[in-house]
Structure formats: structure tokens, C-alpha cells
Image 1: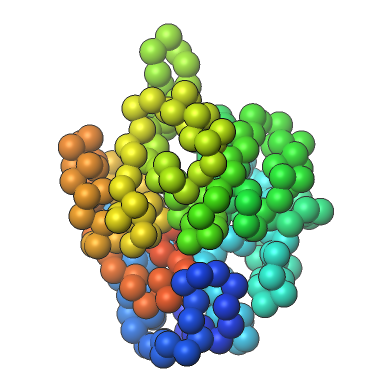
Image 2: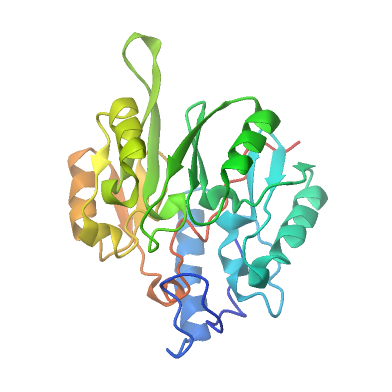
Length: 268
């Protein structure tokens, strides 16, 4: 995670960002602190990367890379405003014992890459390129399933799909319990998700529009926006424990709970 002490909205690179609207950095820090404290209370270990002046979006650490088994595939951001974040995150990974795979293709890390069991779901359409999906497959040697996003409000995969709990399916077939917003994807991607995850939670447009799917789950506790009321009820019906945390100020930059959380899988 990265404390948002330099958070502001001074440019526009997604539909949520309106520089004319005032932002409250102190409020953003307080809301972020609530999320940080919640992770600690749940028993998770949280490491911090230092915020860099002039890089207000560093708080959205999910975009900084994608890590499996101690290997970090670095980010290569699409927009110039965020490009310096890529090397900063890769330097942090190296300093903390991770092997770094330098990116050749534009990709925005765990914003567009989500690990579901042994499968990597990979988003494209607005930020990460299809070439990055091939690069991802070569680096990790795992199946990569490409999904195309079509609604500019949901420009990263983690705004339209949440991994809730990987489980072992019938006959030993690996699948996972996910939630997603169907209308955020093209028809091909909708078919893929319906076939692979028939028991997935399909979230309403209303809950998607408040970044309800930009959530974090440990397999039981799911941290979500308090405004995603329908999704909260769906989670309870499936036996999950929703934890409601408001990151409304950070949503002004187009990010929520998952955006602020990069999972560090397996230190080298």
C-alpha cells in the first residue's frame, strides 16, 4: 500500500477524474488509514512504498505490478502522468527480495491481471494491451484468459471483476468463486465468464457504478464499498462476511479498495 499524502486530481486519464472538483487530501489519508487498519485487524501483513511528490496516483498500488511466487512483472503505464511509477515500484520489488521481470508491453499490473486458482484473468480494452497478456503467459507459464472491457468507467479489470475465493470444483476441476459486472465486458468475454464460472455472483450496474467490485477478499472477509448494498446482500447470501469501508475521496481519482491494494505473493 501507499499512503496518499500527495493525493489530488490535477489531470484526467479516466472518466472519474474531474480536476475542477476539489479534493481533500487529509480526508483521503483518513479513509486510506481505515483500510490499512482493517487489514491489520484481520491479521494481514501490510508493507508500504513511500509516496513520491508529483505522483498522486501512487496510492493505487494494484497498478504497480503483478506478483506470483516471488516474481514481479513490472508495470508499464499507458499515460505519461503515471509512467514514473513503474520504475519506482520495480525498485521497491528488487529492494524487498523479489525477482523483477521488466515489462516490454503496456500493462497496469494487478489492475488488469487477477489470479484465480492457477488461471490469470487478464483485461484489455483501455489500459493493458493484448501483447502484455502474451508476455504474462511467457513469464509465469500459466494459463492466461483474455477479457475485453468495453465501458470506459471500468477501465481496469479490477473495477469490473472481483476474486472472492478460489475453490476446488467437482471432479478436481479448479475454479473460483468470483463476482463480476457483465455489461462491462464484450459478448465474447461474457460467454467465457459464464462458461468458466457458472456460479459467479453477477453484480448490478448500480453496485458496479459505486466501485462495489473494486474489493479485496481473503476468502471469507470481503472489504467493499458501503454504497454497494445489493452486492453486500449477495455476499452475505453466499456466506461471506462483508466489511464496509468508504474510500469516496479516492474514488475521485478513479480508484477504490482493490486499487489501493497490491498482493505480494511469495517473496524470493
